[in-house]
Amino acid sequence: MNTIAVNKSFDVATVRKDFPILNVEVHGNPLVYFDNAATTQKPQQVIDTLNDYYRRYNSNVHRGVHYLSQVATDAYEEARLKVSKLLNASSSAEIIFTRGTTESINLIAFSFGEVFIHEGDEIIISTIEHHSNIVPWQLLCQRKKAVLKVIPVLDNGVLDLEAYRGLFSEHTKLVAVGHISNALGTVNPIAEMIATAHAHQVPVLIDGAQGLPHGKVDVQSLDCDFYCFSGHKMYGPTGIGGFYGRMSLLEQMPPYQSGGEMIQDVSFACTTFNEVPYKFEAGTPNIADAIGLATAIEYLEKVGWDAIAKYEQELLRYATEKLTLEGGITIIGTAPDKASLISFLIDGVHPLDAGTIIDHFGIAIRTGNHCAQPLMDRFGITGTIRASFAFYNTFEEIDRLMAAIRKVKQMFL
Ligand code: 7TS
Image (cartoon, rainbow, N blue to C red; front, side, top):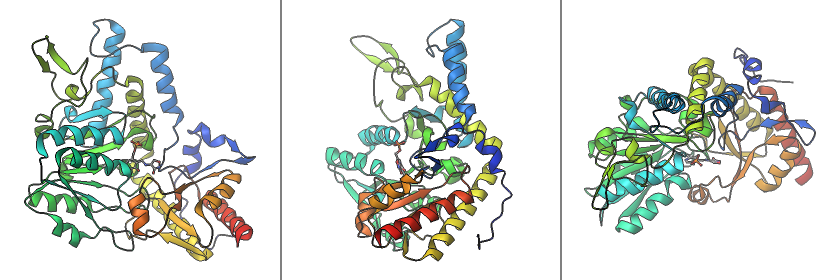
């Protein structure tokens, strides 16, 4: 019986009907999908958009005078506009499509790094970054003989902002920090962190892979310089994502890859490049999935960003209380401001063993270091069990997770 009061105002039964995969059975049980931080499921509307594109207007973009090419180009550019409105960019040209967050950060590390990072310069990242927002900067620092500085994290999973302020020097050239931690759920105070960096004239890149799935972002009011995201983590297709970049920086940055589409004129003597954003989109882009991403954004708008955020917070609160009341559980990451994601340990049980048993009940959770090894080292652990919730999850599903956890405890303790 539930002892915890829950507000059941969100019409989860209706939204669940839009996600066909939620009807799948795993090991004879209805699927409970709690691995949304890894990737989210896709509503039928997104699946239909992909189907429709390939059945009715598949064609290459920006090059054909023929009808289908124009329809595809319009839809692709409409998708860029949709993303730019979601992020409140001042122009859709500030949105570059890539395969996702990883490719976006690599592009910026290469291209921004080429112009703005020199020997002895310093780049600030944080302890709670995903490897995607660590390794590209390490490689850049090796290439340019620059220095990586790391913001420490407090025991509750909150970044140490006092230490952050102390990291700046006249050599600091960039801050690259996550919006929301994929391993702990911590929501970083990015507006404040950006203001601190700008007071030192230092631009800021936000890794928004876990940010955008939970709410709209306003890059103008945040005043951030780059905001990177992945479509597949926000109910869109895999293989599409991108980033917002401040136009004054994008114009100064050289291309990352070269080939078709990104050029203006090519001769063997000299090649000139296309304008932003096309300068950064060499080759045939991922047309279908960009259009699918636009449908995902429309879908999220229809469900309502505020309703999503409120319901996800209720799921988080419910799960946190249940895990706390259960006993024998250690929650890793107890920041006051968290997204709907919980990392925890069942005391005395290896996360992988727990994950294997939990999977037998048809419950998809992630175990391991969550591509955040330095963060795990900081907490003296090798990994956690992570349950990450989306707005199609239910309180009853959390009860099923709790029942599975009790089974794990019975088996191992
Ligand atoms: N940054 C953060 C904060 C992430 O959580 C991830 C993926 C990435 C970057 C990379 O995104 P990609 O779409 O380019 O792969 N995070 C996870 C995760 O938590 N479990 O699987 C992937």
